[in-house]
Amino acid sequence: MIAASRKTACVEIGGIPIALSTRDQNFLDLLRHRYEGFFSSSRPEFELEFDLVSPNPSSEDDDVQVRREGHEWLLQRGDFQARWDASTGRGNVRQNSNPYSLDAVLRIVHSLILAERGGFLLHAASAICDGRAYLFSGVSGAGKTTMTRLAPPDITLLTDEISYIRPNGNGYSAFGTPFAGELAKAGENRTAPVACLFFLAQGPENRVDELPSVEAVRRLMRNILFFAEDPGLVEGLFATACDFVSRVPTRRLTFYPDARVWDEIRNFQGVPQHA
Amino acid sequence: MPEDCIYIARSSAIAARALAGEMMVMNSADSTFFTLNEVATIIFQAADGQTPLREIVRLRICEEFDIDPNQAQADAERFVAELSSHGILIVSNQPLVAEAV
Image 1 (cartoon, rainbow over the protein chains, first blue to last red):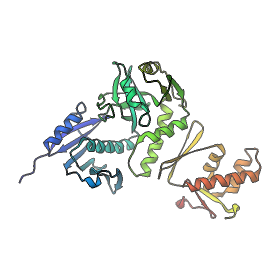
Image 2 (cartoon, rainbow over the protein chains, first blue to last red):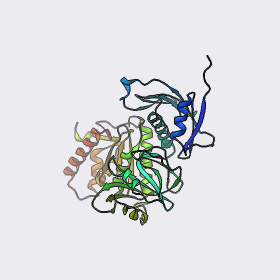
Image 3 (cartoon, each protein chain N blue to C red):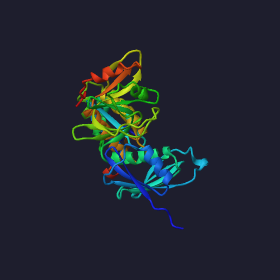
Image 4 (cartoon, rainbow over the protein chains, first blue to last red):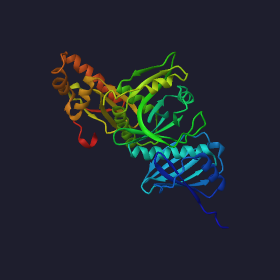
C-alpha cells in the first residue's frame, strides 16, 4: 500500500508563516476553513506535520503540558501529542481531527516562538480604531466579547479572545488572529501599533483610570498565555511585560455595556505613565 | 542561627525589575510575584552572599533612615525569612559562594 502524499497549507499568524501538512484531505479542508484569511504564500519559517489518531476518551481531560527535552519541546494534552524542535523549526503532531486541538497546538507553538522574540499571546480582545490597536484584557466574563460586539462598523476586529503582540522597534504591534472566543468569528488578518491596553471591568458608567505600573505588570503577567515549564522563558516574559508597560499606556476601563464606550476609546489620548 | 551570622543571597531562580521606582521580583519557577518597599529593596539589592545581614542593616538602613538599630534588625530578619520561604532569598550562617547563589 502506498501512503498518501502530504498536502501543505502555509498559515501566517502574526507575520510568522508556518507550513501545516497532512495526508488527510478532510483535515486539510478543516484547516483551510478554520484559517481562511490567514493563508500565505510566504516561505514558511516553521513546519508542522499532522498525523491523525483516534480519540482516547480516558485522557481527554488531561491538562496541557509543555516541557523541553533536549532540543525539542514536548506538547501534550489529552487530545494531542506533539514534538517541536525550535532549532530546526520542524515538528510533528498526533491529534484528533478536531479544530480545537489544532488551535491549541498552534497557540502553544506561537507562544514559544514569541517568547524568544519579545512578544506574547494575551488573553484579550483587540481591535483597530483610527489606525491604532486597542487591547481589552480581563478574566472570562469581564467583557472582552461584549466590547467587540459593541464595536461600531468602522472598527476592525483583530480577535475577541487571544491577542497577538510583537515588539515593533518603538513599541508593540497587535496582529489579528483566527483564535475566536464566544463571538465564534475569526479576527481580521491586519496589524497596527498598540495605543493602549485596557483591563476591563463592567460598571454603571464609562470611565478610564490610571493604573500603577506594578499593578499593570502584575495583571499583564496574569493574562499572558504561556504553557511551558521553563524558568528561563518565564523570566524573559517578565522582562517583556515590564518593557511593554514602560512603552504602552495601560489603564483600567470600567464600562457600561452600550456603544458609547467606544467614544471613550476613540477619544483616548494616553501616553505611558512611566516611559 | 545566631543573628550575627546571617548571610543572604538572591536566588538564581528569580527575576527582578525596577519599574516606576518600585522593585518587582518574580520567582520564575512558580511565577509568584512580589513588590518590595524601599527598605526591602535595599536589603534585596545588597544580598551578595558575602555581607552579613547585620552589616547591611547597619550600613544601608540605619545610616539612611532614622530607625532604631534593634528594630531595623528585627524587621530585616522578618523580611528575609518571608522572602526565603518563597525561594527569593537564600539564607546561610556561612558566606555564600557565587556558584551557590
